[in-house]
Each structure stands twice: as structure tokens, then as C-alpha cells.
Image 1 (tube, rainbow, N blue to C red):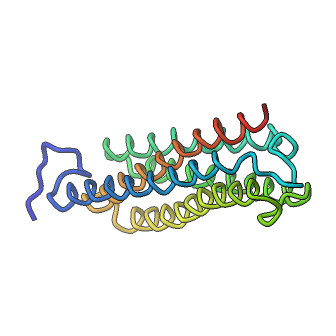
Image 2: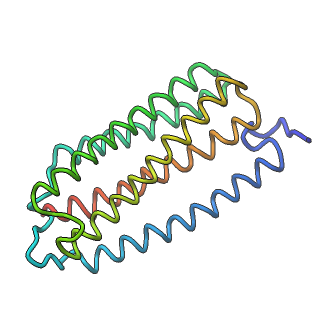
Length: 198
């Protein structure tokens, strides 16, 4: 296998470059998925029936904590990729672990949110608004959960094989995925929660 040493390690082989290109195409499909969810949310947000509206169930503290956890994790995965590029395996693994712990913290707050919504009488069956709310948040949460498992596998491979062109490629692709989830959350925070609390 021909390795191009003038490129960053994650781009150093033709297979790696095609893997990254393929993942960008996959992210395009993910953008369409979340775009459809957001469009559905905007259509259904006022269809509350006899159920609560967003201002009645959204609490600023857990929402801010979720945002802080996830945006900080975007920073730490960036540090992990920087450590990878300068060949610091321990630092890379440490930042990967911190990223996943922050992701777990995010999920913990999101699960708390779901329990609070149900306690306030907002279930997936209450109204069109609550149904699309749970679907949108749940889809994003499921992606974060998948990311936690995926990141754990990459950490295991880094411990076992160190930083090489394969683990670098996988780590970089994971970082793209994680940044994408952060961007989606910014839209959820801005257009679902902040708009809903007004």
C-alpha cells in the first residue's frame, strides 16, 4: 500500500481519502434526515392539542448543561485530533475519553429532560408537537449513543495498535461525525428550545 507522507496521516493512503470522501457523502444524507425532522417540527410545533406547549415544559438549566457538555466535547475531540497529528498517543486517548464522558453527561441530561416532559404530561402520544419533539430529540440522542459505542471501539484500537494510518483515518472520520452532531444540536438549541421558550 502506497503511503503519501506529505499528507496528514488520516489522508495518507488512497483508501483513507476515499473513506473520508464517502463519509462526507454519508453526512449529506444525515443532513437530509435532520432537515426533514426540522421541517416537520416547524410544521407541527403549534399543533399542541390539549397538551403543553414548549414554554411549559422546557427548562433552561438542563438545556444549557446539555449544550455546554456537547460543545465542550466538540473542543476535546478537536484536541484529540491535534494530539494524533503530533503523534501523542496518550494525550489523544485522554481527549477521546473526555469527549465520550462529556457525551455521556449530555445523554444523562437528555434522559432527565424526557422524564420531566412525561411528568409534565408531554408524551409521544400527547400531541403532534410532542411527537415530533421526541422524534427529533430522540434521533439526535440515538446518534450520540451510537457515537459513544463507536468512540469506545476506536479507543480500544488506539490502545492496541497505536496511531497508524488506519486508526488515524477512523479517528478523523469519528471527529467529523461528532462535530456534525454538535452542529445539529446548535440548531435544536436555537430553533427548538430557545424559540420554544419565547
